[in-house]
Image (cartoon, helix red, strand yellow):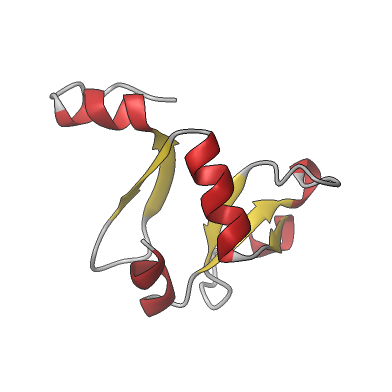
Length: 90
């Protein structure tokens, strides 16, 4: 995941309005060079902080190998989608 993100210019981030004190808040991968990226609403964090939150919340990353598309979802949702439920979300 980190290799894919960094290859595409991505870096770990938290949504500013949810990043307070010791709480990382909502995590994202931001792409500062992408013209449509909402990086003004994001704050850079370390990969360590990102992965701690990623594991604590039992998350998964959907991404396209050839583009900047990525979406962080719950692992339960990822399992449902893998099983054919394309409308599952969390």
